Length: 158
Image (cartoon, rainbow, N blue to C red):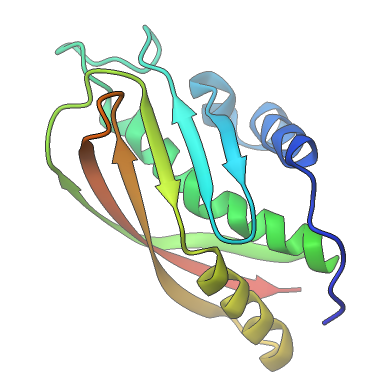
């Protein structure tokens, strides 16, 4: 597969906005912010506000799930853009361990970009769907881990 230039931060930020506006309205409602992205790491922030709070004034489970989804999924878009490929991806399963209540804005970090890139390249060369477990951590403003997600990413290069 031809290796192109790494997609710019602003381009990936714009793609996230367009995805939420046109394809996945929940993203537009929750408004996750792309903080950093490169071939290894992604950081997404979801602010604690009226739209993302539950009745206990902590972040609602659905908002936490959106953050984990975006943190793992944006890497797939990143590598599709990098290699000029069209991909189909989804999440087959999710396992989450809640460690403490998310009572502030939450940063979702995924540092498994190399693994995601590997399965995209394998899917392209073998012309079949590939599955991989991806880990995402949710961290509060005090740098404490509030949740750990394991999502099963399913990717096929079209």
